[in-house]
Length: 347
Image (cartoon, rainbow, N blue to C red; front, side, top):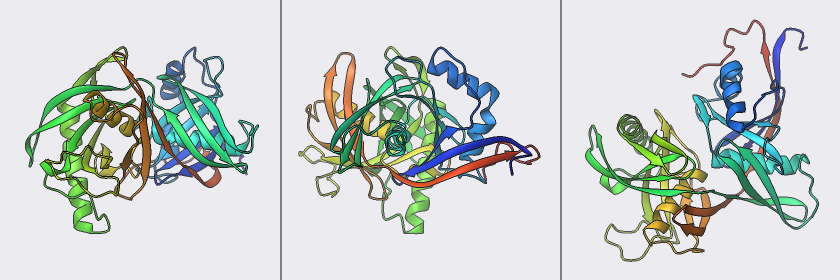
């Protein structure tokens, strides 16, 4: 069966609206003293495996992924390298949720209890990420990620064709986000089942993301200097019932409806874990979200991530973000030595 195979990868597919393909076996060993070195080795020697996992014909333009590796930090349960069709993420909340649930549901991390919380430590390029998996009657019921240090990075001016000069706010949640109010664009975030609304949103997000990538950079304290924007988030503030707040509302928002863009004509299906953490940092730093106060992000599909800031100081804001991720498939990917698309393709 595999006589002409160059690589055979064993994968578990999870989703919470956004698909994550978790590669658990078949990747050649990735040497490295740090997770960054492991990621660099994968990128240099086996980047086609990253691409074929996420791209067509095995994946699609919105497929996220993660390679599970041996950790390098003592006490960690697993190392994780986050991937997407065009490259690598140093952090990814969506894939973190899926990997943590997969490790527990598969038994790779034993379920020592039937009810209560298991705490996992995932080793990533940005450091160890604590993740709490909540069990009820032996089943995984929820997963909660601790964000690590996140930062509000101030306002910036973004010049975008068709929208003119826009005031945006920058924040770091493991990736660098530029937040743009939907009201400033004159577009709607829903209903997505309306083709006109959907295409307007995709066109606006693409234009803003491309402009932000060209124009906006920020220094991430203690992490990186001059980093370009990773994602653009178009958002509208909402109350606890999901109703939009007027621009002059005096009541603090209970959450935000968001659309996240990280590639042309590509919109995230979920509220984004790193994006939620970045927004929490922004609001907490501005004094609009006290420690411990519940907050949520809702995607255009109606999916919610709940969050709360648990610590704040000069060294940043730390938050917790919760959701649930669901297994949707277990499979084996085969790359034959005569495959005409060894790195897949994107159309």
